Length: 383
Ligand code: T4K
Image (cartoon, rainbow, N blue to C red; front, side, top):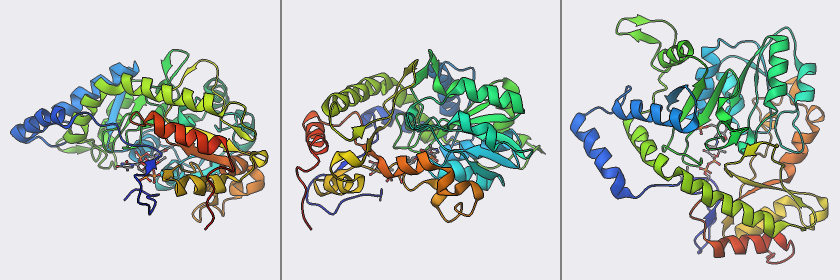
């Protein structure tokens, strides 16, 4: 079960719902899979989707993978990243787990209060002779300062792997947000703007790197008898790929619906004391993957009180990303994980709440959410 199902006799409104095409449209794909008996290992739907996603994003080289976490781990392996990697604590825990699974040491750096993304002004001070890469996240699909991060990476001769899990459909200066960095790891999880049940992709810069990643995601096989590296099983299967092909047809409409919902929230919350959202960087066409709000001391009630109030009304908002990754037992002993090293991220994690946003969200439900959020003291129930 997804987290956060409220024990209520009302239909909950979740932070997101997967966008799904009509079931009837999926059946012909299933019939083809049954007829061919090709279920996985780079079958025809996989090949077709890989080309179609690259085309949609406007990138030349892309590898489909089974999920976003494997996209991150495979990216780190493909570039042979080792030693220390500079990253953000304000993300989903998979970002740092990928470093752990690759034997790298995460070095947490604080974030920019306006975007929630890694603060480039603080990166250089965290670089040591052991640093081999930077792993920033375009959090909520809002671009990092890609130019400055690139400058730092070139100066110190380190790689940049973007966690681009939230970026599908977002563009920056006319380019897909997944086209920046040495590699970008995307997620096509059920909760994402574009979903293939589970799934993901790695955007890379040239055909040689694509070949390397294709080997890595298939146990390291270069051909039937040659294993060139200790790869893993990171392949996207034919069911996921078939769904992806269908989803692409519905994506532009989904992005329009998300934008409409995002704009209605923005209008609904204008002028509410103690409430703000992150700022979009100039040049971005956002994908409205999430609708995070930040609740400060002048709002009237705390972020957690608002979270519980909404739940009492059947609205399952989520505190992405709280707790900070750096506070989890696996990472809190790291010197860079100290809260005094991460004051902005610590504050944002205590203030943030992601409101429901997905194409099927009904206007009257959104109006209810807006009303409850815009009036902190209305609808509070005592337990
Ligand atoms: N990097 C970043 C920055 C990420 O955000 C993520 C994933 C990754 C890497 C790793 O990518 P993947 O390996 O997952 O491809 C969810 C997702 O599981 C996770 O993919 C996502 N980030 C993260 C931000 O959110 P939970 O634990 O909050 O999911 P859950 O199950 O509580 O679902 C949220 C809501 O969505 C539910 O309340 C209802 C709805 N839902 C969910 C699922 C799974 C459905 O309606 N149907 C469903 O099948 O982590």
